[in-house]
Image (tube, rainbow, N blue to C red; front, side, top):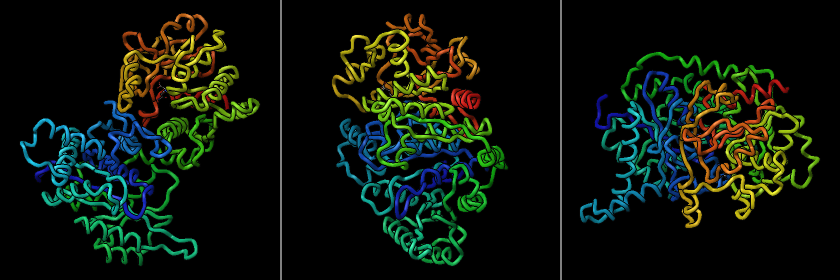
Length: 546
Ligand code: GLN
């Protein structure tokens, strides 16, 4: 590859408003370029000051996606992993906070050689350093960089400045894609291009000219508007890609491919396709998803329900996707029901609604809200033999339920909720104690991938088809080993542990169609073409129940 940067870079920026699918567009561009035989990686830039996404409320920010190397990142990193089938590392994620932290540390270490350290160029320089490092680590032919937020806001201006500087240094190696929204106001019934024109002009005033525009809208952009947009934004009409609303994100790469977006990009970069991988597998998945006639009804029990469906699905994005992938594997569709655990605390009779489900999932969580309701629901699923999958908190609370109702420890609880409980069946991990005591909350949980040894007689062992697996964690509490002998005596199977057997990683109830709880988050590793084994078997059990 010629050029000073080794990799080619595509910056993806948003126009008009957020939430129009910049992450999906970026991942889809990656997917189609990958299908031409290129090594592709993707970077997410979040413009906020937070060093990572770990300290943010998921209601505001969406899911915290954990990488193998233990970074707490944005859900878009999860989308990249699912689309590219890749393992994305911490260098592919940056925030304003993270960038400044490095610059300030370097200044403290006298690494600027006595110079005045300035916002420009030192901050964009650090952004560029990180971008190039990520490209190098991934040995990428093409590196996608999704700039969070929309053009024209104050927050992302230094990242756009970094992009402009890269373009200036190597014009032939850098492209800009503007993902913009074209509203169709109800009273007019006509698609309006003006907001996107403004976005394009705002981008121009940051010294950047869009090469390609992804026209996100309710429907496909028509010819007259395509011409108009092309003229006013200085883009070739054929470089405007129609991106109408679509029922499945997995169809977006196919829509881009139909419009030859990969060819357009390759031409601009003067690159030739390495091999024809025609995305046949991907098409097959989309077809299965479309043609699946049967459904499994899965209840997801959580607490983040107050702010409407939109936020809700963002909070549990990877869980939703993992359930979809697993259902498609069985040529089935997953119908998800969002159940608020707090309701079960007020009215036990409501638990009967679980009888209409084929399976129950309790995903990860923190704090006391809705916990007693979750425990009630777990008891119901256990005793009524409803397939149950507990993820992290969902596993810990299953242990509390088992202790209370099978082992007769009425007071049993997790120390997270009741620090002075006499029977802390879930307690804080020793090395976490000082973090909490000194309020060191940022990035200090047990994070990222750890190996786990599976019990030879467990369902998990069969599901994975392996003895040792690796899964991603994000927690401070763990099963209290003091109670392990009692749990085992009463019929709980410790199905997975850390290799030194000191940490419980998976529990199972053998005498149940499917009752599995994991201390880790398997949802992060599910891919459309490679569903996660535990989700796959959970859905299989749900189908049997149906
Ligand atoms: N709150 C629990 C802990 O910190 C579970 C965390 C989670 O579900 N991710 O251990």
